[in-house]
Image (cartoon, rainbow, N blue to C red; front, side, top):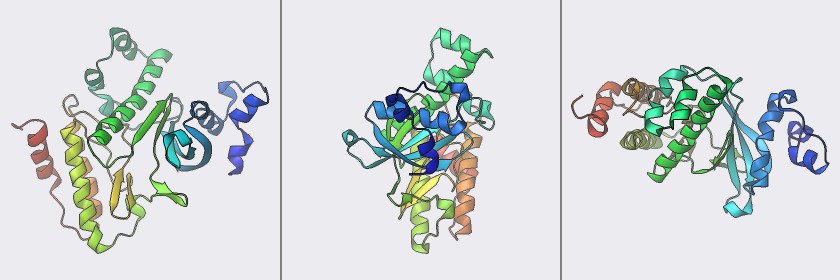
Length: 274
């Protein structure tokens, strides 16, 4: 096991009767790993193997699944503390989310303030939104990781890859010419399917599409928006299509016009009069 994981093991510390460190005294890595302790106690995972993706907003760990889950490996996405993560253009993505989730009056009042409690509400809402989006899209048959459980700032989901390592992102994969068209059409199918279930990914690119053979899996949905309530959703949809098209055009694929295709999808699923 990686040396960094051996330096701080919350389970071993608890068993030894050691007084746990105060949250403010933990390093960032210790704090992230500590959030995985409840997953062990709840018999969701048995071992933390290694980090597989590190970003500004979250770190994803490959974990050994508890036998009760009937799978070997799972991915645990641990959001960084709200003080340490930085979502770009946060308000663009949060626009309209309260209408979609219908929070109670107390929550609405808290969200309108700049208190610590309000910030905690926003942080938790961001995580809950990604979990809900995964549940909706996976149930609809989209190519996304299967969501398993959310525990605090952790989303436990299907691991895409094998014992040797996670599936590579599309941007770093050499794809056979015969497969490229198939993958592109599959991604377009997912964009269509997302919109039919009131979601625009809003940050789609070749960097958040994993590839196992010819099978793409789209990841990272915290910024996903609901086109019914977000005034920027159409522009974000166009950007998604443009980003994906730019990558595939470089592979020699004839790609859709992002604006025309977005309009067709929008008229089909959102507003026929646009």
